[in-house]
Length: 152
Image (tube, rainbow, N blue to C red; front, side):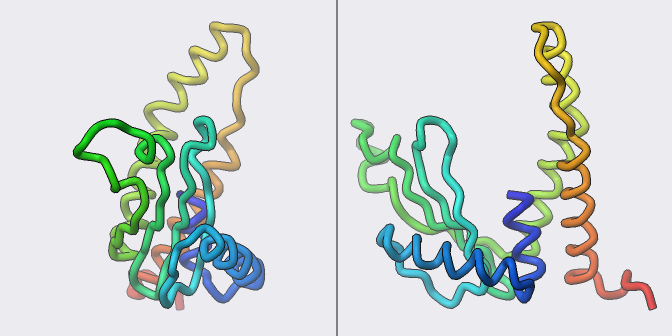
């Protein structure tokens, strides 16, 4: 989600435009009718390829198009027919939430995971690149949503 935010906050970047063209094509082939999204970022739920998600943004709105294969085959009546859809969130709030949960993960949970990995003889992960991405998204957020913080 940090990567999606990174793209949402710089939609004019050539790499983002290329990625969006590819993602838009895949989303439409997947049966989603995209609207006026500027950026389209595709990802999947890693667990057994259990779902496909398109994180999309306009200039001020995030749309998450989803198809959850676990829900598609559930026998729970309250979830029947709810395996595919779209959720809309204001872009500013989406980025704020992603920054909040990312920071919480990096500060609270990553050290615990690393301790467990170490105890089981596994190599530690390097969280430097994730911290760097977090700081880049935070800076882009400040530029877009808090113009009073811009440096002259």
